[in-house]
Image (cartoon, rainbow, N blue to C red):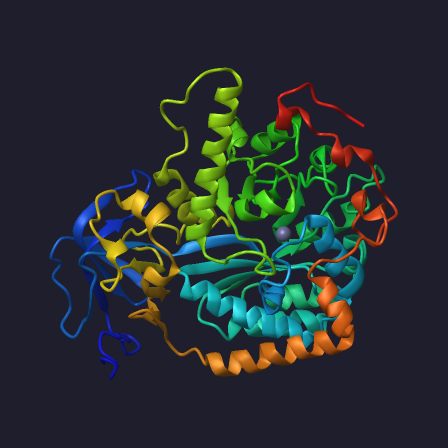
Length: 496
Ligand SMILES: [Zn+2]
């Protein structure tokens, strides 16, 4: 049925839907682009793609003419619980983030606060055309927190992967908890919700994280890990994972910025992928966004936004930032040698692939990430007839990567269901979400006190220790977290 608001289309359950006449970026293996094509969705799947499709009687129609139809975007690393602190840490460094969340205030988050952040972040993602998000949920101090995180994700009609983590305890501790294991088994295959384990490997030669990897293996859960983060994780962590046989094709290495060539070889050889959070790496300091060097090793890439405590949460920004960082580096290296880059390596088409198919491949999902008959219908229509930026539409990949923004996301489908139509979320009670987020902000603010709250936006450091080890659950620290300079500065690898 059609909605009373003009242009809003919300088909009834079971009613087919067709997007008519858009420029379709299929993101199939050949990256086929179809000008003025239709996309027919039946029973949650893509039924057909082509010009002037014959459709079943009673099919709902969306006019996609002048717009771009593309697969739903996939974010492989977002700390959704932190969205309740949106923008608070805009001027932080990574060290200040560690101090605030890991050392001082992360423990103040109650289950309802994790729920509030997740709820806000989940709608935020859908609004921006991000149909699948990995919730890198490392604030799960108790199973109650985990239940709250999962409940929020299930309440929103997107696809989510709950990557279970807990920065307040060692991964070998919380993964051993029978209540945590029972939660993970129970929530593993719950419709649109997937489950992973999320923890970091510090490089401690005793490799205490081994027990957590064994739990992941026993439960059949992929592991996602912050790797190659200046001052936190390094080559030693990668080496230990590799030597113990825990680097797998489903392993996702987040950032992977401060690593030596040896670590990239180990990632490439074991088939894992890298989740690049360019806005994050550029301003927090994990290392230079690594796309310019990982391509030498053929490592698959997906994109992510990390946390809205600092940054935006749409993958248009991620695509744009990643193109900028990669090209900046390429020009800089050439200029240092007195030469000129005449053709850039990284193309707009590639970042659109990373924002869609790249995420699907990282998650081992061959049923999403492209628009092809038979695939799940996670679809985004980029179209804004009220915007002068919407035309002329000459280079569709360039248009998505450099011209479009979240305000241009007209329609979003998840599993064939319309979750955004005519630029408005469907079924989102944002007033209720706002009330729950306000309650969380009020709780944190009153717990911290006004002075600490204000200082938190530009926190003082408690000492130098955090520079070598932000993890409160271990004494291990190593100067090698600052050592992998070789691939960063094109000098010999420096150890120690
Ligand atoms: Zn992160």
